[in-house]
Length: 324
Image: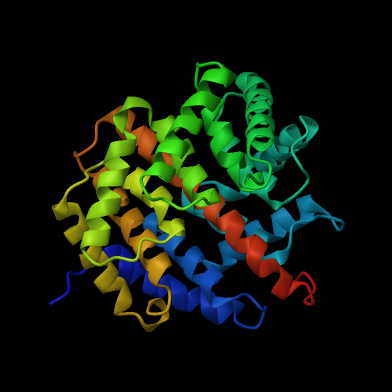
């Protein structure tokens, strides 16, 4: 008998609303699924009128010659609604943060819009210094790994830039984590690099050995631990890393898989099940305040990186349709 999870029930309601509203706009099901789940994690129901108001304001602010495609605009809309009680007011702040990033030589592209989401709660007086440090981190990561590293690491370097350590110290820590993960059987991939950045962000709260332990336990349980799941292991290690936690995750995967749209999304269902578990942990008393705050920051950074990558891979199929 499966466990009932309110967030999954809410997801199903949201999925139907979004699908019915967007099905003729050439938005792929995986994107709608991701949007519906973001609402559910925030315990919010989809309000189509609000969705359209926020989306249209983003479209107006972006202008006619924007690189922002419709599918990306919809996901930005979802992120603002899920994370804020005043999403329409946050649109202007989003574009202000975006232009600050671009002014400091971040590229005029989708990943920069999503990275700007991480600046909405920051002190304006500190933003420019943080952006400059983040850009230096990105450029040096890119120089060290020119083929591996791409602009999907923007959210991570922005969070890493809040660290008081020097750029050189941060780079060294990320590289040490990355090499250790490769030695322990992780594949050479951008996801492994993301994971090394998450480990650097977590400081001494999570070690590489914690992530490797979870990795090995999951493989022993018969999981196919693909690279896209690697960052979730780092997030999960903030809470627990034992057999019981894998049971908890599997219960949530089974609950998700009762919905037909999840059955072919095996990697995504695992990732979302972990996010659901972490969400529940953060709302309880299992994490102290600092770990709770860190967990939410890391989950947001990971969601933004994954969403940016998702929209980049799906936008080509939407090029033939004009903005609505």
